[in-house]
Image (cartoon, rainbow, N blue to C red; front, side, top):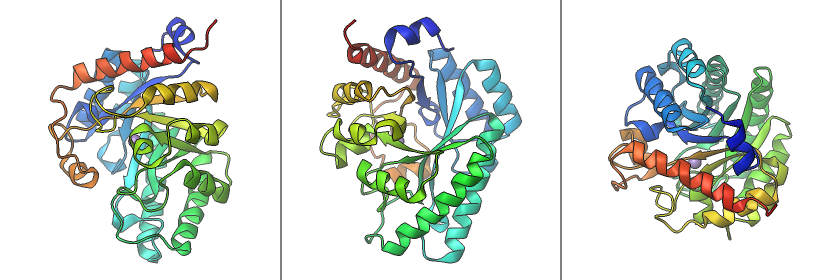
Amino acid sequence: MVDKERADDLGPGNLIGVHALVWGRSWGTVEALNAIEASARVGFDVVELPMFDPDVLDVASVRTCLDGSGCKATCSLGLPFDADVSSTDFGVARRGEALLRRVVEAAAAIGADFVGGVFYSALGKYSARPSARNWEQAVGALRRLSDFAASYGVTLGLEVVNRYESNLVNTAGDALRMLDGVARPNVVIHLDSYHMNIEERDMVQPVLACGARLGYVHVGESNRGYLGAGSADLLSLFGALRQVDYRGTITFESFSAASAPPDLIGTLAIWRDLWDEAEPLAQHALATIRSFLQVAKPAA
Ligand code: MN
């Protein structure tokens, strides 16, 4: 439940979320309902539902569950290589655009107004640098998708990911350039501390560069495990978020081989069992994010 007093006290009104795959290794309607209930029970404001395949969810039950839980939903996905909108293969790109329109429709149907992730390219390791045509393909697809999404009241978040997960947008600078190309008001930048820790100079400059165009944040450790058990400079990140007066959602993302879905284990190289039990991990993440927001709060 959103606790107004708590939000006012701790941060600039940010909602705190958790990625639903923290709660289980397979994904379908039953798992989604479980993830929503568990996220609400721990005290998160938002649960981020994966939309790799929007057809696996019974949107009516998911929406009913969300409405009763007090949790808001956001959605995220990465495209497969056979539906890559940056591809110069027309059939592949068209498959990607069709999939993304179904994702937007499903997101809107469950009441989510945000879809983030890697949908400007495939999610995975490319074997070559992108060409100018790949970039233009992606920009064109995103322009069409953002117009489609606007009619549903959905905002799109371009997630900046590391070099092993896309060849197109690896830094906030890349995302800003893509945003300029797309030039639509309902497209924002989605930063993730795990990826920033690999590709950016520090945790501050990218946030300042994005400024008001930052619309969604993933908080993840350098090893994607427990917050604080890696080398990501989260304190600096939260300081920077405060500096730009970031009011958006902050979502915890973590993967452990013990819990991740088999497909994602290969794509994201999740080889290690960083944790076994989801609930203590999620409780710890929520408390840690709240404390970072508290520390980042300006002196009264
Ligand atoms: Mn992420």
